[in-house]
Image 1 (spheres, rainbow, N blue to C red):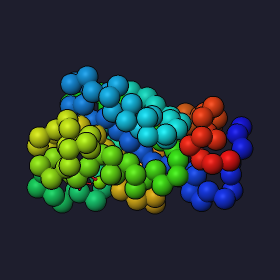
Image 2 (tube, rainbow, N blue to C red; image 1 turned 90 degrees about the vertical axis):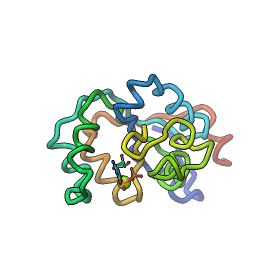
Image 3 (cartoon, helix red, strand yellow; image 1 turned 180 degrees about the vertical axis):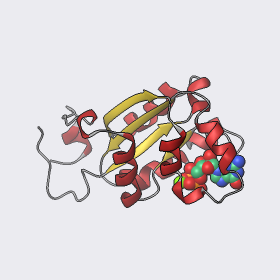
Image 4 (cartoon, protein in one colour; image 1 turned 120 degrees about the vertical axis):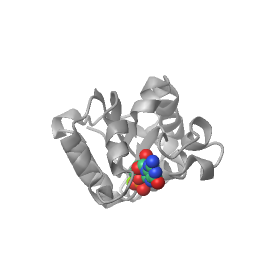
Length: 161
Ligand code: GDP
Ligand code: MG
């Protein structure tokens, strides 16, 4: 277990991040993980998964009626995904900014999508879009026992003690 400074609100906030099948195929896992690590977030869960349509239909429940939904399902089941949970202050919003706009054409250089993708149908990474959604996605993709509580030795340098 580790000590948490109660003066820093949301320090235990968590988000669900995934390297989508195109990111795995293109050997971008390391670079994507690196961006979250170097920012100062803590990795609390990571696994490689070949997901079922059943899980994806829950994950993308809001998109069932979209015309691109069938191709989105084929894309997301086309190969393995790296599923991760990252933790830290404001991690949900910060991760969306790290990942960039949904459409890579609008994603700024320096963002993952802005640096590594061209088309909306192959945008390499997923990030939860709100704290509430993050909780649901983490519960959908991970068992509690797969999430690790641990302390990083630089904690006090990232969050003032
Ligand atoms: P996100 O939260 O930024 O990933 O975006 P959404 O939740 O709106 O959409 C989920 C995923 O569906 C996106 O990341 C894309 O992979 C895909 N998607 C969204 N809009 C479109 C679209 O207009 N066309 C296609 N082909 N895929 C889309
Ligand atoms: Mg979304």
